[in-house]
Figure 1 (cartoon, rainbow, N blue to C red):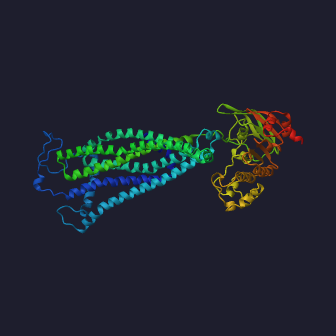
Figure 2 (figure 1 turned 60 degrees about the vertical axis):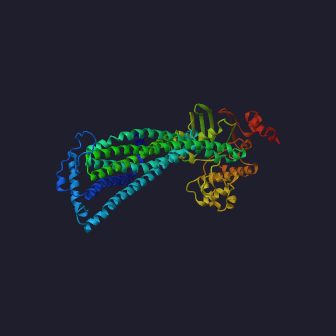
Amino acid sequence: MSHILTVLRFGARYLRRYWVRLLCGVACGGVFALANGSFIWATRTMTERLAEPATPASASTSVPRPDAAPSDFAAPSPRVPTQVTAAVPWTQPLRVVGDAAERAIEPWLPRRGRPLDWRQVTGLLLLLPLLVLVRSGADYLNSYCLGWVSERVIRDLRMDVMEKLASLSLDFFTRSSTGDLLTRIQTDTANLLRALKQGVADLVKESFTVVAVFGGLLLLDWQLTLAVAVLLPAVLFPLQVLGKKARRAAAAGLQASVSQSSQLVELVGGIRIIKAYNLEEEELARFRKTSSQLVHAGMKGIQAKELVNPIIEIVAMIGLGALLIYFFWSGRSGSELVAFLTGVLLFFLPVKKLAGVHILFQQASIGAVRLQEILAEQPKVVDPPNPKPLKEFRTAITFEHVSFAYRDRPVLEDINLRIPRGFKLGIAGESGSGKTTLLNLLFRFYDPTAGAVKIDGVDLREASVRDLRRLMALVSQDVILFDQTVAENIGCGKPGATRAEIEAAARAASAHEFIMELPQGYDTRVGERGVTLSGGQRQRIAIARAFVRDAPILVLDEATAALDSRAEAEVQAAIDRLAVNRTVICVAHRLSTLASMDRIVVLSGGRIVEEGSFEELLRRGGVFAGMASRQGIRASALNR
């Protein structure tokens, strides 16, 4: 029961939004249950009317009570069917209603020994179809309403998960795998959808049916009904064991699904390397292994789910056999036997479905917990309650005694920098020296562990993240293009940009000519990650995106590192145009791109070890000069 409550508690805040449809579904489930229970009454009514009419002689026959003590199970003396159970006070109102219903339908149903008329024929033809119509209609409306609610709940949940992921800081993504996030968004929500759409519908109508049928059986014979109810623990115990087994199988299956999703992401993203190194068989072997684990976990879940019905059916048949023995021994009437057996069967059918619901919720509860973990995550970088305005950039960017560590591993230590407006700063250093981390702090992807980064004297932690990032444009080595049109990719730099602004930005980035050669020009879709374009073309679209943003601060992170010499020259020319009248912060491994910078700082081990102009650093013969010489750049070349 706890796993059902886990799923329902998790979904409660979403279900409340659609409470009208939810209540309609629940009400239809109640009608479905009453219609199911009415089949007990209909069965008893029809079998009684088919029975031979009682004769005066037989009516006077003595009938021993079922609690009489027979010497053995030998056939008792002939008995006449009659009601033998004592009346129970709480059943009297229901019996009064039942008697009134019997009198109302008396003219509309035939009875053995009575001539048929049109009303009896009509009643007999319509009785069962009407009951089935009510039952089926209520079943449909119950499933439709709860399915309608479930689909919207999952839509809202997925949107909340996406909003949460978008709000989280970069540190969350550095400790999460893509496969795990994909599994949570797709697989976990799909399991939850199945539990809500199918499980909640069955939970409502089958629970109501159990109550309605059980009530009908109590009215028929409350003592015998309570005796039959003793069989329920024999069903519940194995159900509990199988539920735990299904939960363990679902957990193992989710873990295998996460691994498989991660491998798929790696396969698609690294297909060039995989083919270049002939790694196809190795990757297929990894995928085959996780697929086998997924199959194993799936079969364990199937075993747990499919064992439920045989167990319940065996227990039910044992109870049915005992029930038949009791009926033969007590000499109950045929109409009572048929009605009670109908009720027992109608009782165990929803019990079987509820057992399946139990397994379904066991599997879905794991996903609900995993989704709750995502929604409970809190971003490390948040806006202050009352952010200071940062609408424009006027004076300078400053790093004041800034230090930063990734999980207790120092990356930057005591950085002090001042970048005046209109200044061009180059940042150099070996891999792992902290260059990109410095940019991450400027964009406030992270907050420094010590010190402060300020713009115009405002600590970035005191300003709105949206205001801060509106002042900056980023062009990086890893160009991210979306599977949209060229125009839409450029327009990402400025939401609401007009077509004229997009085309002007493309011209400034030297991208207009090749864009017009594409099949649909600016309306050509670039494919996932821009795979239909060359590296230089992708980079120029990224520069056009920065142009259309028209931000006062331009950040270049290895913007030309992955390009050949011709593409680099074209892109560098576009960058030079973009840098005019802007404050530029340029991180470069290829040091020749820093020659036009006003000043260069050199990082090593997270500290600034040198700074000066390009020429000064070359002539100084320090760390920068050593890096430059390895790239064929020497101070002597400056004098020629």
